[in-house]
Length: 152
Ligand code: AMP
Image (cartoon, rainbow, N blue to C red; front, side):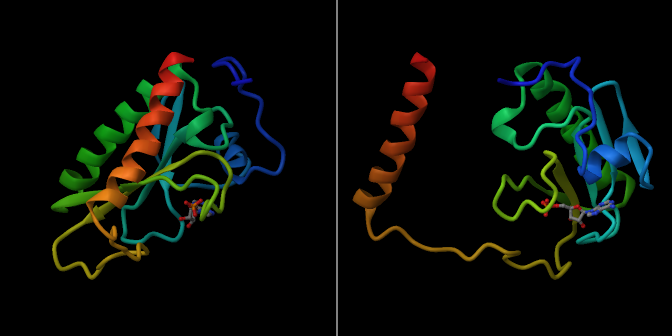
C-alpha cells in the first residue's frame, strides 16, 4: 500500500532520510513541507541537484498522487534555477528506478548542461529497431499495459 503524506517516519539505513532528518550533512538548495533538494556530493557538473520527497518512497511507481505535483513542480522550477542561476544553457533531468539506483529513496537528478560540456551520450548505449514492425510491437505492449491500468 502507498504511504500517505503524513507518513514521515525516516526509514532506518536510508542515507537520504538521514540527510532530511539533519543527521547527515548536505548542501541544501530547497526545503518545502513535501520536497527537499540538495547538491549531489559527486556532481556530474557543479550545481547538480538532487530533489526528492521528504517522505521515504523507494521508486517513482510508489509515488502517491498527492506528491506528484509538488515533486515535479519543484523539479521544473529547479531546472530553470539551475539553468539561469548557473549560466547554463539547459539541464539533464533523470531518475533511476531500482536499476542503477544507488540510494533507494526516490530522487530526481537536475544537472546543468552547456553545449560542449563533454557529456556525450552519457551512460546510454543506443540500439535500433529491426524495422517498423518491431517498433510497433514494442509500442503495442506499452499501450496495452497503459489501457489495462486505465481500466483498473
Ligand atoms: P542514483 O545512483 O541515481 O541513485 O544517485 C544517487 C546519487 O546520490 C549519486 O549521484 C551520488 O553521488 C549521490 N550521493 C551519494 N551520497 C550522497 C550524499 N551524502 N550527499 C549528496 N549526494 C549523495
